[in-house]
Image 1: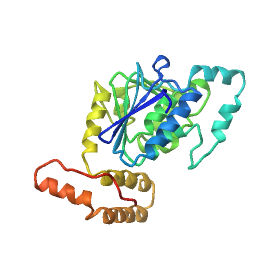
Image 2: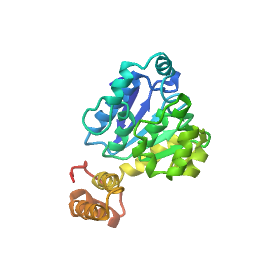
Image 3: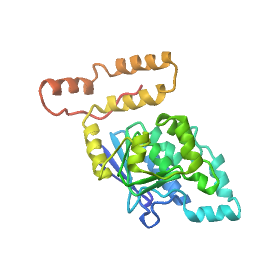
Length: 271
């Protein structure tokens, strides 16, 4: 695992840190690769219950590394073009996977945002299920500053958070929002003076729930939110039928009646 993204797992909670603090965790080609690798590693961990994603240093992520922009201003690099046209397993290309990987994880992902979250950095945060931002954090769909459009899976994330007119205004203007502004618009879930501390507290709460139900809950919304009514209703029925009467579900019932903390086993169910 690259040192550019660190992962520490304890009691089913993965503490994932973007770790290029001297550059505000800006997205170099090596950072792209490290984030993709981190997402793949976590996706393969069946013991995982929840992920907290944050950035070391003074900001969450400043977006694309300025050196990459300099090379683009001289000549479009073969590597940039390759990333936009390189598809592995799944629908996302290699430029989209650092953000889309978090949306595709089977467990909840909580992004803790402080300092700056610009451009690609914001799109990575948008891939999380929940975003907690510092009130004075700075967020922007900033690609227009460089004559570009956002292209790191924003079409699959921003649409679920804000109306299309607001999305267009942010994309056309590149306006910088405070964490509180972003919360008022629905771009982030809520604000907290210490977003990482708040994210870890929420992660511990989620990790104490039935892990099968948590995974199924994420799957339910990800696969049915934009589906037709028959698909959504059928999925509710199918997932609930699979959950009912399982060891972890029965443990939730027993723990409630016995007024104790549940002792869940690992998630084992497949939809």
